[in-house]
Amino acid sequence: MSLDILKDQEEPHFPEWLRRKLPPGGQIFKTNAILEKYQLNTVCEEAKCPNRLECYTKKTATFLALGKACTRNCGFCDIDFTKTPKAPEADEPERIALSARELGLKHVVITMVARDDLPDQGAAHIAAIIREVRKHNQGVTVEVLTSDFSGNLAALDICLSENPEVFNHNIETVRALTPRVRHRATYDRTLLVLSHAKQSGKSRYVKSGIMIGLGEQESEVEETIRDLHRAGCDIITIGQYLQPSRHKLRVKSFIRPEQFKRYEAYGLSLGIKHMYCGPFVRSSYNAGLFVQ
Picture (cartoon, rainbow, N blue to C red):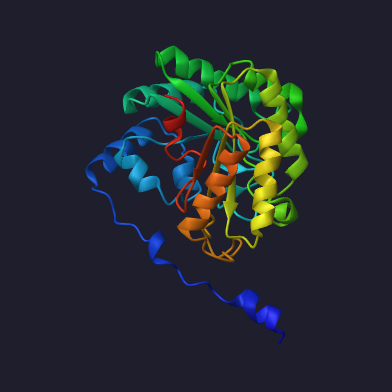
């Protein structure tokens, strides 16, 4: 057996800086109860986010719209995959809006599964959610984290026409690893979507995120930061990839906190407004920090 194969099978040692204490449980149960009352899905649960207990303690969550089964089967994501998901629920926009009100959210983050089965890729449904959230929650800011709509810019414009304060679409990884990490999505199409969103002027901030620890080189991460900057991103998040289940891509390395700081400094030196980088950073983690 070659040395390369042996290296590929080695499990990196789980570092001390990724160990967290459990938060107090009281508010967690209250948040869960509200989400269950309105029968809502969250990316916190479906994607097994490591921050979900902390966020639930703060009575906040990231809503997952258009069902909890995705038409894409990305190597990093543990959300269920199906070629034939259920039809969108007509009352989901109102349920999300009422849940946001009961949670007392000031910044509402709405993400979605990819819906390649729908003619508009689910864009009209996301637009309806934005309208309902604002109807029932005066003064809130809204962030949408969308798919690439398969490059359908007309569908993208349906979402942007609602003027979300933050438009977010994640590039996820560096160019070289994209075919292995993402399903159907491409590196250049993501840059096209972000650039179109920026040029539309419909959102105050354009945002994207990267996971690291999948085998990328430092120079490749810096290249991706530069590409996102050229596409017009105002906010970039960088976090540690953590394998959500044994069926998904393995972690190749655990990145030290100091390296995250170096990426943060590099992005800021290019003129990016906000760099949020750290082992536990996720695209919607503490999302309201840069908007309020």
